[in-house]
Image 1 (tube, protein in one colour):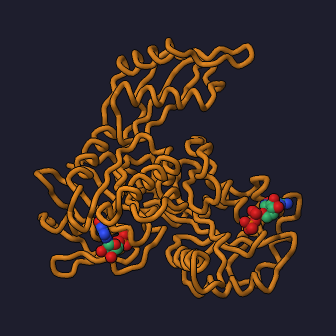
Image 2 (cartoon, helix red, strand yellow; image 1 turned 45 degrees about the horizontal axis):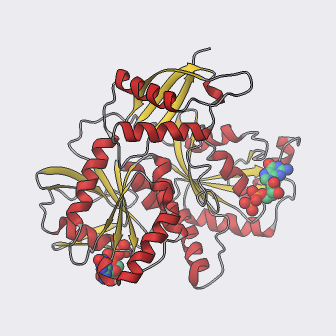
Image 3 (cartoon, helix red, strand yellow; image 1 turned 30 degrees about the vertical axis):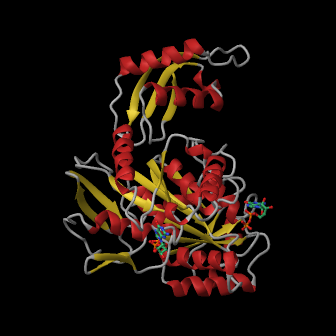
Length: 434
Ligand code: GDP
Ligand code: GDP
């Protein structure tokens, strides 16, 4: 499981600057997807080969009693409670404030591991900047500049040090690990019960601690799956019920641990930012994806047309995924969703030979050559497969660092069509020789 780092601090100390720095990946996969980068509080990061999740609690206002703001405050509380490591950010230029003190108290009470981060310290004497924050009682301050990147790598290394580096080996698993993800009340539990109700559940692991994800292996029509829980499921008699409230972090961790995500949305409501965020996170994680538009029974023809349009507009970056219109309540459409899960899993795990990849690459280049960059003409020589789930296609050649993102996407689409890889995102990487 990837450790989850949660950034906390009063406004303006540099939380979102730090968040951006911690989630800056080489692979700018979703960076240019409209609607996804705006207002992002959850992201993936990687430093020195270590992967982690980051949550920025900034923008979560902790006062309102109801509505979306209240929901955000609740998510901030949940994020603190579920953090593997809290990064408590203070401002080295403005010095210690009463608000810092009260946040420190609250964080210490949470009992979660904590690092004190003194930001905006570029050009300042580190020990001097750190000194006044010792009295917060949050351990030795780490002095950084999020804006300049000073000390950020050391910060991540320190934050990840307590967590063992687990090798994600290619286990010879029988079938896909599936996560049903979605906002509260879209019908996830109903779907899971329809799915598992009549199936033989082989085992139901009670977790060692509440922080572990629950896995439910099951078979359906002779095929094996593992359901990754997103909501704190417990079994009561024959029925599963979610005993915890919706948790963004649990959802993200379940997505991380899955091979295929079923993104569930509610047909009776418009697609929200939260739907798009979960979808974007799935894409960023490289997971295969099936979209299930639930409660199709509850709406009329006019609304059906409306929601289809809304999905096309707001989730257009999921062009690779199949969409199903279902009623979990009536048990309609479940088989179709699971059929697409199988197909998406097969696409995600496809083995692509170098000769076939290279032929597909040449066909794409012949149809449309990569644009010149000044005097450089990128030259693509051959392609080989660099990974599965998601399929990674590594293209070798010269001057490939000048290939624009739009051309990368053109190639990704070309490979997707050539190999009929529907249901999984696909990544094209470039390796220049010379
Ligand atoms: P947040 O409200 O905690 O998320 O803070 P922001 O990340 O939005 O940063 C608040 C302000 O501090 C912005 O003007 C940033 O440019 C500035 N800032 C962030 N990090 C640094 C830093 O390392 N050094 C300096 N000098 N300014 C910074
Ligand atoms: P979760 O929070 O995503 O697990 O959602 P639940 O499974 O608890 O469902 C939330 C509400 O939506 C419950 O009242 C369900 O009965 C209802 N619901 C779930 N699926 C459907 C459906 O296909 N059609 C209709 N009309 N209602 C549904």
